[in-house]
Image (cartoon, rainbow, N blue to C red; front, top):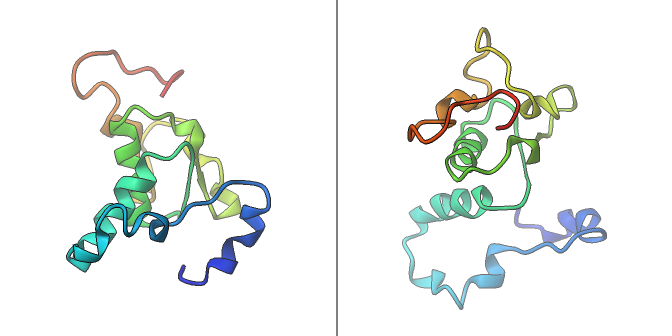
Length: 120
């Protein structure tokens, strides 16, 4: 969203930062603009919390990266009210496998722990 006033309701309660805040310090003006989407995913994946869009592959990739980093799914929400907290449970994969990321994709993939539906 280029119109930063869109975020004013959030800024009233939280500290909000934009990529523009780091533009000069990170030398982003010299970067190929095709890399901006990749930078967005990296930054979003490392946040304390993340809110994304149900059915979005962009959101799905960010959520998967958060899983690879070991960040809890309890800090992921979706904008669609009906699915807002869907990431807070780890159901069996039976339907809509394309709608969001499943913890089976990252929990225990390094063989360093046994996957548990109690903590993910």
